[in-house]
Image (cartoon, rainbow, N blue to C red; front, side, top):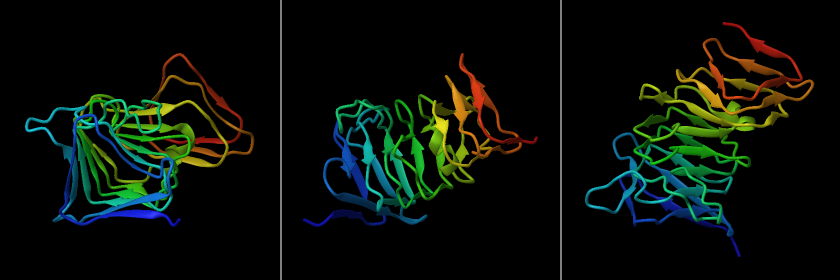
Length: 219
């Protein structure tokens, strides 16, 4: 059987029922292509008349061919039953997707986006985060370098929650105007170059940095 592709056209609104979710690439070969425009974004939202954060669960992306541009995700974020893990984040990326760009993530009851251990977007930039009830972006340390430029975090006190891991490939952590927050430890293998851009702030709660290779941190 061939791979199924769900293509959502510009200007479409997808209303997700209470505790519902949308999955692409979990358990079956499927791809989500949601490419809107600045004038006609694609909206993923609650089916409730008076929507609240956490009305629906998640959009899960587990296929490399998936792509999202000019979309809005809002009012999701409750524990997601897509793979039995009850992972909490409104959009969950567990593949090397083609890109997530020019997209807004707002009013999630938890993280707006989670980039997991198998997630490594080929483009993740020009996105906007606001009104999320936890760190708007949660990302495995090994995928932080895939978070590109010009992502905007609108809320004071927002942060990027980094899941502990050891870097196995060269990685540059960009300054997005909010701190990286992690329980630690974070580390890098020998010969792995880890670069922190000027202005980057890492907040460590009880763990440590374990640097195995060259670290460049020049303010």
